[in-house]
Amino acid sequence: MTKFIAAAVQMDSQDDKMANLAAAERYIREAAARGARLVVLPESMNYIGRDMAQEAEAIPGGPTFQRLSGLARELDLWLEAGSIYESNPEDPARPFNTTFLICPDGTLAAKYAKLHPFDVVLPNGVTSRESDRVCPGKKLTVAETDLGKVGLGICYDIRFGEMFRIMALEGAKLFAVPANFTVNTGKDHWEVLLRARAIENECYVIAPNQMGKKPRFTAYGNSLMVDPWGTVIARASDKPGVITAEIDLDYVTKVRQSTFTLDNRRPDVYQLRKL
Ligand SMILES: NC(=O)CC(=O)C(=O)O
Picture 1 (cartoon, rainbow, N blue to C red):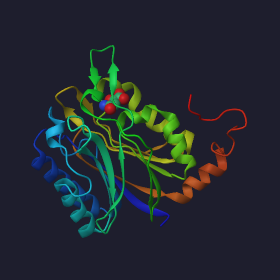
Picture 2 (picture 1 turned 120 degrees about the horizontal axis):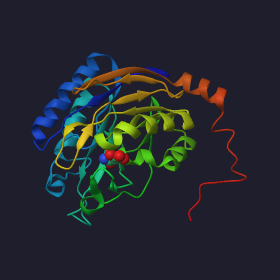
Picture 3 (picture 1 turned 120 degrees about the vertical axis):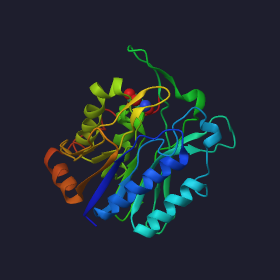
Picture 4 (picture 1 turned 60 degrees about the vertical axis):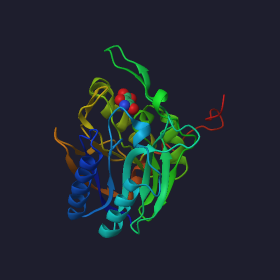
């Protein structure tokens, strides 16, 4: 399928898992009613609180997976489930922050654990040590779907251009980037980073964000969908809700055959390599 409707869901998740899941279900149903074939939820969609380890679940198999899997099957759509805390048997106190893609038949297509924990000391007073509470993942993930290849990233990952370049070279035409991006960084960086990743890799970017006050910071909202030219094709209001836009994979090809950013690289002179 080269043209389809995709949706990004902006949420204000808090520490009541049942309430968050009920809200997600309402938005997924709304996106389906608006014709979405792919729905992307934000980071930490089912829980934002202080006890990640206690809320960790298995993927697949856990209750959040099962509920979302049932919805994907019922509504016959691809569901990129934002992220949840995934049980980590080797280090139970530090679950993974994992996003996962569910096929329209309800099975797991792919999952990806956030590679880059949000470990920062910002000038405006936000200090974050996500790695104290969350175990970083170890691999990139490009999911095969009948909508094309989808590269998966989470929030702070968007700052690491190498990761997205590699996924584009592996065939991704669309990136799904669920986030819980802060207001303080978001006002200067969020849109610029998303548009840069779209332009330099000639890919669509779907980036649903959290909004509202959280235990450690306030989330920026401004969920965006960006096309491969870098144009913002959908932007959320200042409320939780669903945004939709048409994804046209032929347009990816058209842009790639106009700016040739992937083809005109000089791997004979520079390459991504382990230092
Ligand atoms: N919250 C994050 O993981 C990332 C973020 O807010 C930022 O990169 O800024």
